[in-house]
Amino acid sequence: MRSDISEARERLLSAIAALPVGSVKLMEVCGTHTMAIARSGLRCVLPENVQLLSGPGCPVCVTPPEVIDAVLALAMRPEVIIASYGDMLRVPGSKKGDSLSRRRALGARVEIVYSPVDAVALAKANPDREVVFLGVGFETTAPCTAAAVLTARDEGVLNFSVWSMLKTVEPALRALMAGEGFDISGFICPGHVAAIIGERGFAFLPEEYGMPAVIAGFEPEDILLAVYRLLRQLAEGAPALENEYTRAVSRSGNILAQRILAECFVPRRDTWRGLGAIDASGLALSEELSPFDAERRFSIVPAAESAPTACRCGDVICGRIRAADCPLWGTACTPEDPVGPCMVSSEGACAAAYKYREI
View 1 (cartoon, helix red, strand yellow):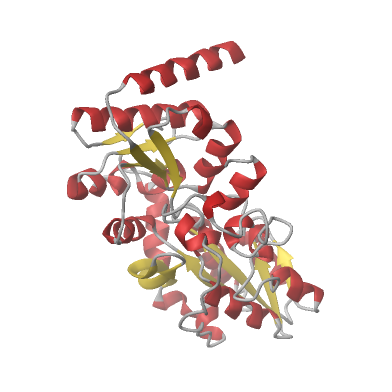
View 2 (cartoon, helix red, strand yellow):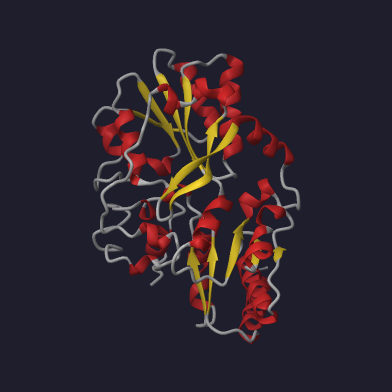
């Protein structure tokens, strides 16, 4: 089996090298792709004219520092229990070293959960406390967050609320392409998101921007095939949307998940690290579910903007630089002592480059 896989990779690499294209930059927009590319060493085996850059595909990484600061302040309220996925606990706010892990050491009640429904159970077990689930993610995880809110409503768990930091991919890609100095030749589109929103969720890339796009799975062979298809489109001058991940992604996507998203959320203007405020790029709980909206319940208003730092996570997740090009990477910023979220998250470009020593 391994020899078959190796032969498949070699065939794909040979086909990629044979395509008549110049220097190109391709961007993956998924943290799972970022880790898969680094773990399998794909950047090292691709031809020198093909560069892979990471985009805004890590939900923890795109959360701005002023939001983290507001989370840290909420965590110190004695009536509050913060429930979160593990990645969020070590993400620093605007001050290096200040994170949910540190606040927990100072006495805050912070619990790691593996699903939003676990946070509802935590609220049931602690009726005298307010449990706030940090809803971080894209369209992939948003349906699970919605299901938790509906569960809390139906079961009368009134001490549960969600701080929705959920974001949607399309507005971010539009903002990225409209940004100054944008220099990407094609997109490797996220298979997990596409499984929810369907192929058509990325049709705007070739149709409106003439941008080659391929929805890809997560094995090295999936990604290499996506690279080949993107380069073939460029060589032929025929930008299109192709679906390499047909085993999980349909044209229409997951209709049930789309319905629950439409029932529970409304689009709102939201702020992304590296991209700024983008219209209709966030998901807020609907008016009907506002009793479970933590921002309303606790009158949370994050600061307008944090003071700039030497951390260049924003440039990394916009493809302006590679992770190792940040002056802090691997020196002042390491997984053990991070400055920015890209070095913390299990899907972060800086953490991937550090773990697998991509230079």
